Length: 388
View (cartoon, rainbow, N blue to C red):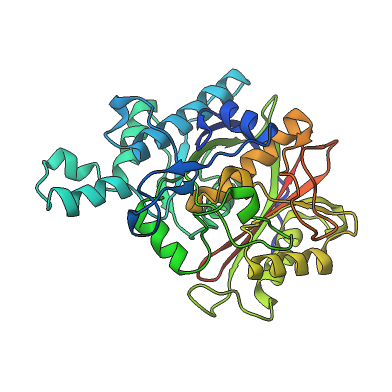
């Protein structure tokens, strides 16, 4: 495997989450250990009771489209660009756009089939297409680099970040605007994830979702759109992306391969690609959805490959599991943590892994490994460093 050591940097961040519109809402909510989730009427099994879900609230610019999805995607990307420009970024000639998405425009497709039986205008129909938010965004800013969607289930955020780094390393682009969007917490999707035995809707999040702790039952569903600007030579970046890796279990549509060979190998490849050793990793920003098999997998590779001093955290108990946008949310949190000097880890609720952080923790630097395990066998890991 060829290691790339060019300094790819995160120079701007934007976010729309269950905490509200804007990255400051995300950071302030996490820093205060507040829950992004609330009880939402009509989202429980068969829509007969409220459900805990970290749903993106209404808002955004109506000119960005008729849906929360379109408005969130554009708002997160626009905020990231504005933030990067405020921090000294000047777009190059070739700015690319990557959009990580698994289920797009769930609300509009639901209305298309169920309420309107396909009777929509051409303009409304085009709004459903995954190319439309890409095209309108590129037009708004006059960007002419490549524009592409990326999809790898819950690992889509890591997949997009690694694709952006590959574009930059190969000289295909000068800069990348990367966005990950998932607003798919509809009643129907919540119901089926409950049937899979992984989503919890009837219990307060910190009691239900306890990654690496006793008594964890799974995760609370979340929604988010997160934008980042990736480039080189920035004056005040949030973090560096050193490298990473992806692999596939080729085993099962939901379960992790029991020997953990591929997921562990993926982390080893990510370290090698980044030019670092396991002993260099100070923090594991875990996938951490609170399921038994993910806890086991991440605890195993942490024990086998990382330093004895490596500490673990997962913000999913607070922000929710944002599905296709999950790892992008969590990369943004790690990057913001470098800026603010602490990790907004959730408080522990039960005995568990001794490496697990307990509540907000001071951060003085060090490398972060961001792991993400997507349903269906998608393994991924990215290595982040504080800005130089």
